Image 1 (cartoon, rainbow, N blue to C red):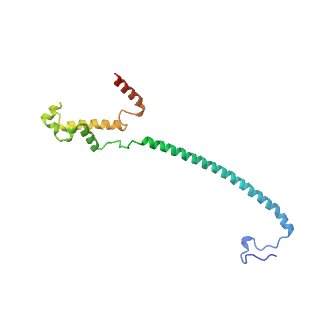
Image 2: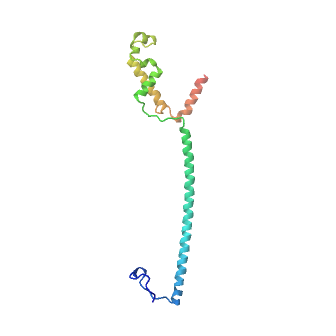
Image 3: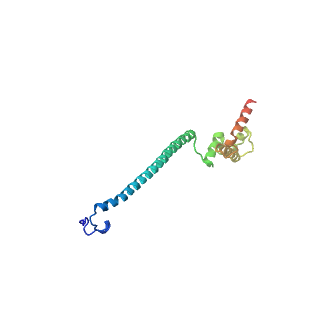
Amino acid sequence: MMPCQTSGMCAPHGGCQPEKRFEDQHLDLGKFVDWVYALKAERDQLKTENTDLHATLQAAKGEIERLKGENEALRKEREGKVLVSLQPSPGLLMSMAIRNDHALGCPGYYDQTIMGRKRGYEGVSHARMLECALTEMRKLYEEVVGAGFYSPEKEAGYVAMSKEASHD
């Protein structure tokens, strides 16, 4: 009998076994060959899985490059543009109105008889003039942000109308 390799811990390896004879070892050779073939089959399966994973990785790398190109195109398209709110602030509208008509920035300007008459607005208060200007600026702002009559689908039609008007 073979001496115990793990004194007091025989259970994990099946207990102490008698020494094998040559005939017994010959019988295990078939199991060994089966085990080798099983390992080869597992290796082949892992190679196939590795090949599939490598192909998936290459496809993912290609997709990454495509998305990088698309991202760069979108970045270039965005250059020269700014993000603006769909709703203008009251301060922005006031600034636009004053830029269009500096007199609106002087409180009471149109309330003075001589100033209103000079511009043909006699009888119209400064507050009413400002209200009308703010309404016009809101309409302009809506056109700029695409919330007015304009839409990209109508672009060609608007361009054609503009060309017709400029040629007449």
